[in-house]
Image 1: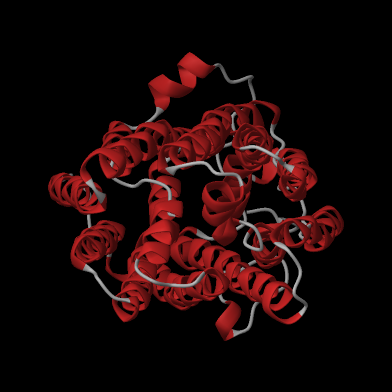
Image 2: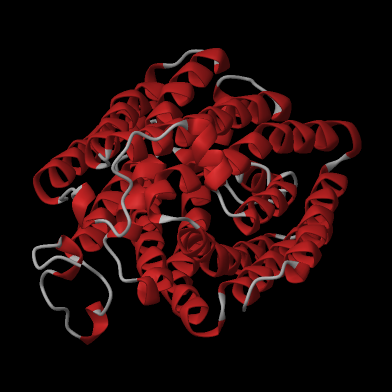
Length: 404
């Protein structure tokens, strides 16, 4: 490492060990952005189905297309950020686009209009995610990657706690309508862009370990990806086929008796568990191995979906949402740390792009399949299918020859 490398600046105190200034600031950016995003997301299923008159299939189309769009762009943005040796401009542009499009959902008069705005929102996510993850990896010593990605996810989920609380405040105390709440999400979105542009620093190409000096080509990038990485993302794709949009969980909660005004609070419970379990999950993977922790998380997912198959009361819904949060704490940051471990430094953006692509390619068929099964055979069959995919993927990952 060079003396002026931002990775090593500002010797941290004990709780900050392994967390650089870039990681802390990107955590703040995600906190603010998710505060804006999660003012909207928990209310979106109700807005689509009750206000705009759409059904579960339309919800699956909106969320499936939106997430698949984001993931296709995550591959492109990750590869291009490797090629041009720039991360920050992609991250900033992506956050700007999302925070410009997202509040306008409050002006939508039909579900196709929501689809268009969610499409642009997810374009922004696609532009920023892989370069941002690569920047986190490049700003972190290898032994602390689980902790760093866990911290970033914890900050993200903290924003997802604040956002629904703000939405509940506006709906219950100030008696605002849903569309106004959506429009007000522009305020934390503007602050997001300011913090990012003023604080986050680029890691110069020459400061990255084994950075490639010549231009990168996409076929060359694919050939140089380690085989273990490619096998892991294929297993992840199988898991994703059973991992439909969480909007279906909110719809299920509504059907089990959770009133609309409390849906944001239910979302808060989920994200409190995500937030509090993300750093411990990442630290556990640093100490005991990534694979063990991910498999444990996928089994929690399968058990949660099995629980939704048989749930028939409001209290069971709240309990299952809390347990579901553990799945995220055990997997989100740890999967990204595993990708960073597998990927060569000059292909890190491309590796995160491939990882995100597999999740996104599976998102559309997963949400369409879940919505179709629900509409045709009932929610029990849909949740059972999701649990089966998770168990199959867990078995395959356990057999993957990776230490830990």
